[in-house]
Length: 215
Image (cartoon, rainbow, N blue to C red; front, side, top):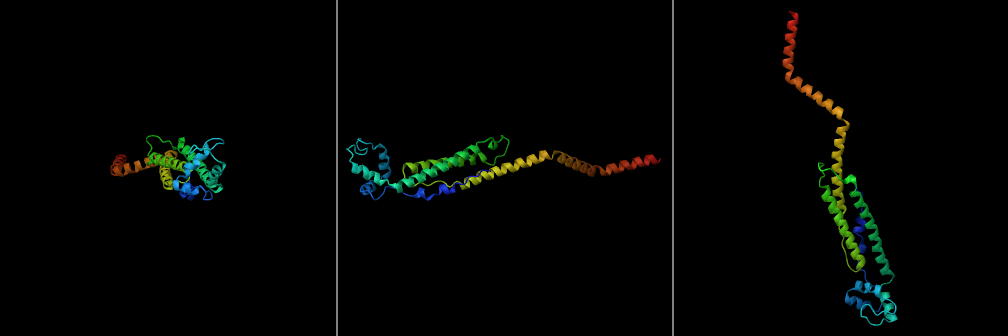
């Protein structure tokens, strides 16, 4: 059985938030009109001293630089950091479950009935990977609302298949451990059936033997 509870991550309210720059900067109205706070934020990486503006290639004044930096204040940075923390924790859990589901314990012989385990496992891992991609998108574009797949039902499906496989394995092992008792039971049942079918013949034979002895 696997233990994976990531519902709190997949339903974190931060993923539904439209995270944009601060309203305190005089550029906030312009950025809002552009409707692309993420694009402006990405330009900060290219704002270097003595370099032209990464957006218009004009000379950058200190006031514009300050106003752009003011857009993305501490509140904005904390929210982005929160998403990054969510991503790190979620990724660690996903990598752990990927490793566990790839272990030899979950590799079965061809003649074993797996109750759809392989397909259920692949679907779960596929959705977890897609969720990671959505979180990465949110980090790159904080203003974008993303929705993750709730994988709790998929985890339950995988665990149901594992439980059914384990039940069959336990039954088989139980038969192996109790081979002698099973053989004894089969032999006993065989002689009971044989006795029932030929009891009349045996009785007749015994009677003839007794008659012969008395002569």
